[in-house]
Image 1 (cartoon, helix red, strand yellow):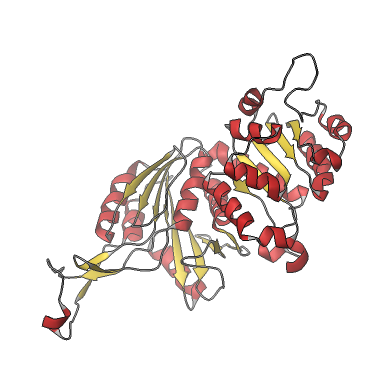
Image 2 (spheres, rainbow, N blue to C red):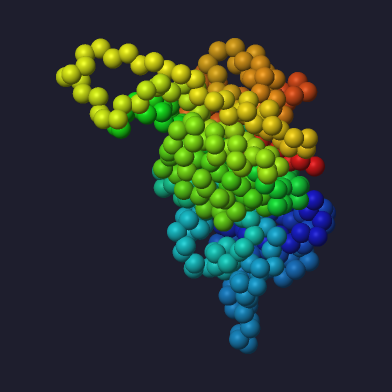
Length: 400
């Protein structure tokens, strides 16, 4: 999947810069064309001569490479690339990327790049854990950048693992999976539901849940980044989208979400039902605020909402894919498998509230994917962006 691809490799001033040589060699071996852009600090850790010999291209570091007026065009380079990989990426470079501080050739190239950007952080634990670094990484994610870091379960030690750069072979795998999925998802139409629904009791009160919508929005961005045309049906959340391929439909109630999903899915290639839809709603919604002083005890009579997953599963045509989610607290696998079969899903994403860092209002998630053939794949705790990538990769295998 990397053959013929144009890859910009950005190298910054980290002790992990030596690993860039292994990355270049692997990319070239797989048929990619690599252009190295290195910061002045990066040259203190690995020589441009080594990098040029491996890539068969002159290394770019300065805006003006000679004293004859010739210069390196970061704009042309950004248009040339199919992807930009910054590995290693120091805290300083990440901060500059997040805040648009274009004081070297690497950052100006990043700001001009139209292609997907992958960032492999490399720093010590304290720098990585600092709130400013985490805020900058979150900002890069919100821009649609792909952050590559070892998953929690892969760290040899929490103290030495967090912040270290991911190994070159795994970075190459991330790039390969991205291009493999992109070739499949290009121009595919995907419907995604996200967030909670609010079921009104009266004009100021409702029945809802703790869903933040982060997982669904991460999935929308991941699908759009792979070239898909995404219809994102979002419940009431405070999140925003960044990719132009995302068409957002805002709803509030389960009924509104049902109507939007039923309208969009027939023309779609796939649906990912990530929203936490209320199963029930009050049978009667008061037209005015219910006053505590005038009522005493209140009895709410709840009636079931329409089952969006089951309804879409019933109209799913041959060739369409439907993905569901199951957030469970007990008998997780059994309940998820039952839901998978009852609702005619192709696979279901299971997460448990018993797993620390998973579920509502977290920036991370820990999932298992169960498909309709009974195959189960479990994943370690990851950022929701990383989880979205795993789900999209699985989806791509069914859309071939």
